Image 1 (cartoon, rainbow, N blue to C red):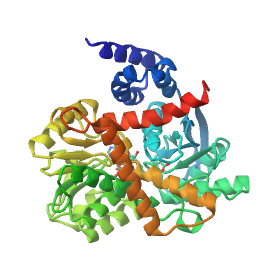
Image 2: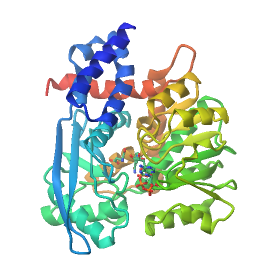
Image 3: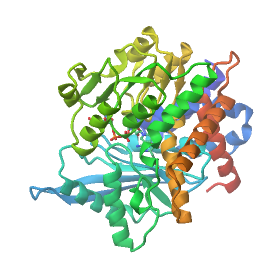
Length: 450
Ligand code: NDP
Ligand code: 2IT
């Protein structure tokens, strides 16, 4: 066993001993440790001041009770969280997730990833994440509003425009952000940019809604440019059917690529003719307004197929864009993708690919970008929303979109700088980890042991 491997193992033993029941958090930390521990051998200041271990301990992890009453009059309780992971380069920043699977492990993994991602954006954003095990599925509008109000009644004690600025994630979109913002304003009496992803009429930024999906496609375009390839005419698999998936498909259409799949937790649809703009509008209406299921797609478009309980990775395509959730693409899927000739995998979701599948892509020299790099356009545009709120100004669509493009190019170039292997292959995992680590680590070194 190499010395690096021994060090990685003993580091992971230490982190595991402190958080033994947090598999997703340990998964995210291990992936970072595997690239950062070797890097620290040659950059000893980070090792000397124990930067990596310090980054694994949240500055603060808050859990709280969220009481609400459902439409039948039942007294209900959910658990609320906010993980304030790292504030070295800016106020804590990261989304809120409402999903029944939410627990400390999942939010710590997301907050940990967020620190590196936000470090890549070029903007002054620390890392955080929060949410609740509340399940929005099947809830009435009144129940969702009441839950959001109750959630914010406690959360507002811990956030602020220069303290911690939450946004959306799974189960939290524009509607929920509106309810959360309304309650914050009501309790504090202050009109502040304390959340991002707000409606355009009340301080939201143009392009924030689209930014994560658009950014993923901009990032993949940079990767392909570097490899003398392009999106035009390419067949793409997209998973998920929420915010990130929808705007990934939209931007793929802008670049004349063809998305042929979408999914939700029930299964996936395969539309060999491609998901065109009209079909995409149907999906937006279905998922955002009616809170419907993807199985309804095939009722409307019978030439498509619905595969219940399955993910799309067995379908032949050029590129894959996983945009649903963590660990949705495993080793078996990776082998299937490669066997079918896929050349690139660009993550829209956070940590959608299991570690053995990532390893397989690297072995096969597949173009692969981790979410913390390719999905950073969402939080970057949140950073632009914060800038506009501080200025009390509103930028045009083109201005925001151009800045988003520039940021994705900068993130890409930064990953290339730190991720280039001796044979020319770009290890984007290594590149993203080192670039994010150096940015945050240097700020931590300057600020002392706090
Ligand atoms: P949405 O809630 O808008 O959509 C989530 C989609 O993923 C839905 O189609 C949902 O299906 C599906 N999904 C969720 N959980 C599971 C599961 N356990 N198994 C299978 N499918 C699932 O969320 P977003 O589009 O905002 O988020 C998608 C991913 O992108 C997440 O990993 C998130 O962390 C990440 N992300 C989001 C950003 C943003 O700005 N919103 C920014 C960067 C990353 P169903 O409807 O059945 O639940
Ligand atoms: O995972 C993410 O980067 C997000 N959910 C967006 C966070 C944000 O603050 O915009």
